[in-house]
Image 1 (tube, rainbow, N blue to C red):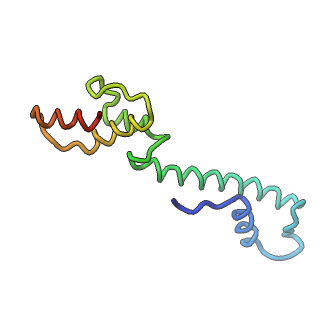
Image 2 (image 1 turned 135 degrees about the vertical axis):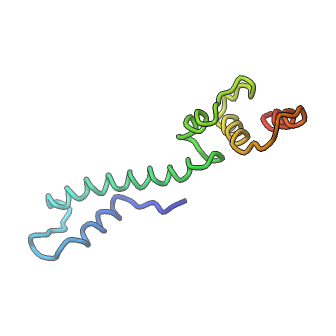
Image 3 (image 1 turned 90 degrees about the vertical axis):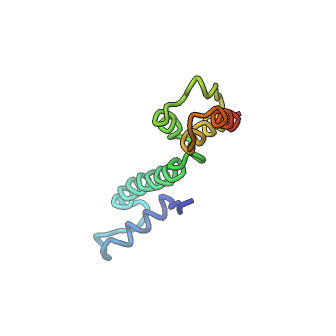
Length: 116
């Protein structure tokens, strides 16, 4: 997984970009520091969301984007059966996404078997 940075990491990075001097305080009670802490918290959340997007970009590990994967692939499909669990739904997405076959009876049976 991609590195996760904390709000403290972002605060430190933001403060290191500021000039030195009395006009640029770094104490925790300074208004400037409190404003930067607000930005740092937003950056931390954005970093976490970006990391989750990397996980959801692949059908085998998706969680939050599973409904989008299903909609893109025409699932749920009554022919594929009901998949009430996340793992079952992922299996259907992977099977539909990776399916490379034809319309023969043998292919359809093996496809159905792969779905359980």
